[in-house]
Length: 70
Image (tube, rainbow, N blue to C red; front, side, top):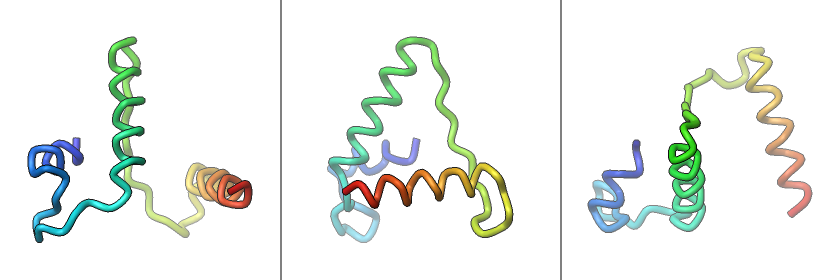
């Protein structure tokens, strides 16, 4: 996964800047690992934004709903 390099580099990016939102990334990582332990596969798939993809529209709506609740 993409976060493994950051972890090896003490949560620093290639330019030696700290990785932003480490707390969120670590929480997501913990969830992924918990799913792995139960035999559930987690997969990330790139989807072009603003391209009339139903999944992208659904994710955008959920993100906006969550942001409004903050």
